Length: 281
Image 1 (cartoon, helix red, strand yellow):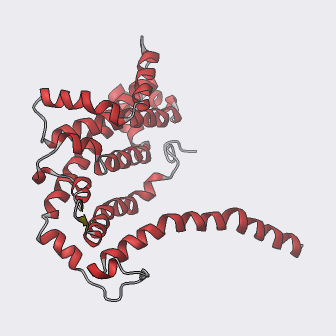
Image 2 (cartoon, helix red, strand yellow):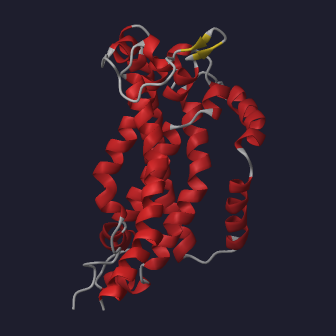
Image 3 (tube, helix red, strand yellow):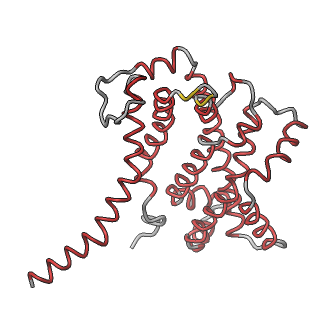
């Protein structure tokens, strides 16, 4: 019995814990290196051999970001874009996912295929036509252009995700609410949405990250520096004269912090039974 228990524990260690540890190391080591680089002095960053902990912890890289480069303005620009994309995509995917899940209409298969096809085109292929569209609408150097395109590119995936969540909820819940006197809209808000919290959080988190990390379309549509987003200003740390590794690392830490904080607060809502508590007995 002891040998079986030892074999089982060893098998679990090799097949589960060891790969998980390697995976975590693969993810966390670059983040650790980024953090300690942001706390090093400029000369120490490029020293050979490399130091794995700062000889002297300094915060000059962070102070320089906000005092000289106006990092706060770019941070605010990114927040506005990411939050706007999150609200637009979450609202439209709720409506579109409900329609695709609950209604049968002519051309539904065609709409489904067209939405699926939009996910097969690389962003670079769409850049030129989208740039011409934004130019025609006088939206170049306007954050609204990035908001529109980021929302449009995130919406199909989020709609498919929301449609899957709707399909997982029995239609009998809505029918029971309508028998009790609820309208269709009332049954959606009173029955479906309370059970869709985890799905809305998942879709909103995806949309937020897509808007927060948007780089390609920001490069294409925004050229005025005061309207830069974080990905654009971080890219400017690399110039023909060299790379400011300390400032770049500090900027990456600041750019990463809101996403980590977001997931800390929403992780409870990402996992759970959608219809838990909706039916008694």
